[in-house]
Length: 350
Ligand SMILES: C[S@@+](CC[C@H](N)C(=O)[O-])C[C@H]1O[C@@H](n2cnc3c(N)ncnc32)[C@H](O)[C@@H]1O
Image (cartoon, rainbow, N blue to C red; front, side, top):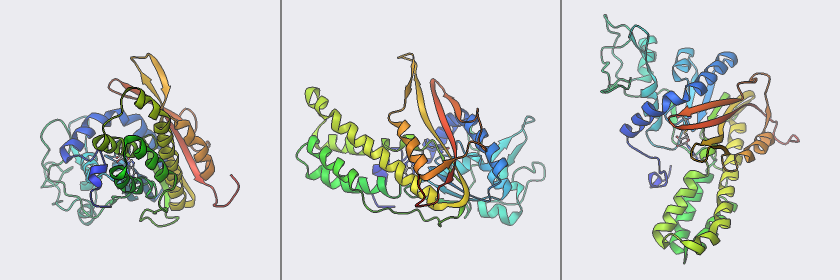
């Protein structure tokens, strides 16, 4: 990952911020996590890749550890997956009994996941001698130190599209005369992206790829990066001038979204085994209480033809009513569309 990347990633935060995100957001993801867990029981994949794994809020991490799944977790935010693993490994039963999923494994395996593992306690066999609960309500072990497993990749899941856009647009913004000409250059860069840069995950290696709550983020990071940089350099256009830029702004956002989805699908098809499956979930509708209505998340319906181009829909193994999950997070409500996809043979007619 390129130097200076953190600047691009508006979300790049501290371990404390990730911890807060897990505490606050995880309960809202329960329905999606349960759906993925049921699917995993049905499909029994032995090698799984999670793209945009983030803080693992919707990933049934303990289930994967217990099943001995070979797990690859990909996200470009430094430290977020490690925080997610730490925040996912502990559970508490109805009697208040604490269990660390790594302590259920053999000593050797446990050390592969947590380097500080040190034999199970006699009076609390669910945790090891080094267990120390993190302060506050959040259930996690303060002494957790990630080992070699699971494999974590700090890479771009859009085949390098989003990262190369950021790199190239930075110089163009500085050289441009105005916001408007910077926007023109940004559109040009997005239309003529750098060549595809694959993830360091082998071709046809995964039984299951999970891309959950990722697509709807694709235009956000690169567009916000461009807009905030251009505003710092040239000032934010106001009034009539801003209105004139609307068309170009939407054009840029549409290109960023469609190219990112396309590259993402190409990567998924590349790493899936021919008989593998991809679970894809994204926010399609969002409720706005102020406007008292449901809205389409901008241009998300464009994702469907892209899915059709690279995959076959598997509505046999993922059946209604599991195609739509109603996610409520505090005051916000979303309808998340869920698909199970099987790769099309490259070159076969769509
Ligand atoms: C809303 S979160 C997904 C939720 C996540 N599956 C979870 O359970 O917490 C989206 C994640 O995708 C990551 N992401 C977005 N665009 C990316 C890209 N181009 N390359 C790598 N990661 C990306 C973000 O950093 C973020 O962690």
